[in-house]
Image (cartoon, rainbow, N blue to C red; front, side, top):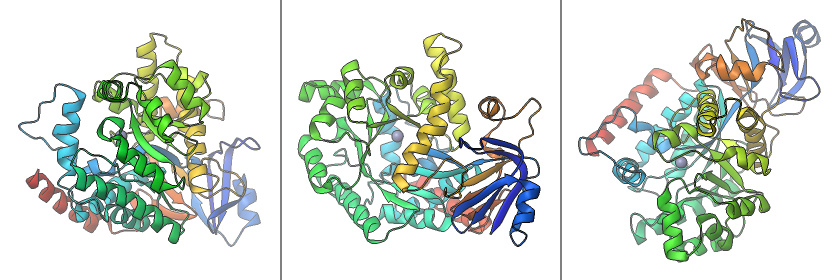
Length: 441
Ligand SMILES: [Zn+2]
């Protein structure tokens, strides 16, 4: 049993939202009590005391959309890569990289990404994977790393016809095989979704096969209208917008995640709302790819469920939230815009998505909830409480302030050191594999 105390306890729970000198008691995988530090220490004298050292104790952060497979792109420059549009970014960088990822490379990309997530206080991730060199076994290779490091991971493989019929078939089978694996090996830390790249790289027959063979077991995770290519393709081939196409195929629903949704029309928003489908915003990626700004303010006012991801642009969710606020204000030219939308995506939106996916109460520190807790080494110089905490998170804190990461009652990082792996030897293996990927692309 642990008591994490001597910190500013920000619970995100209604009953006790904030305690200035608070502590949380953890037994097994769950939170069993919260209160003042001294009271908790007296009540549970046998528990190991984890000193937050006046930092902020808060729920673990959640990344609702990322790509482990892109890890080795960091620092990579390809002399002939000079994209002029979004399609050329995909084709010239990301698809080229994923065509060279062996199972070893997938596994070590996962170690690299997840280690950094843990160091940024992220306790649950939703990954969207591609490794067309070898689709088969890639999700299990990632799951091996996420299991070893101890994070919660919801995985899928991005079905696509972009590498031909045979590879597309393998991508479908990889999703189905992993869905079966998760059903046969139940774990609170591992989930499957059915991945799809995007409407414009998947034909009708493949789409229908995915829906038919999934038999409603899991939700779909797909990029939607990230670039205009997706819109033009659907209009040209099917005479309908991408969301309408997905709706007609039976892909929308309360367990399905649509990444981006930048170029969507009002009728498409109505379909998303009607089906209670989730939209996940990735602002830094959208800006970097020069694809536009997602209308999340409009989504929010229509009551559409929203989450925040990074699209692997960063592993720091606070950085993603800061960018989300800036792009919404910049885009709307309204300096007060986006506050509620961005903070609720980051906090309640992501908590709702992850809680439903992992069948656990996540994103809040309350009795009975899963013990996914982080401590941030953050010393506010203005008033800090439940009313001002979001301002501190968006303008003061950053992911690397995290000093302790706990998932399901297990400490994964303490004093910035990962506890479940030998960091030096894993990082040297990551660099070795990354070098060989760089040579091959
Ligand atoms: Zn993405």
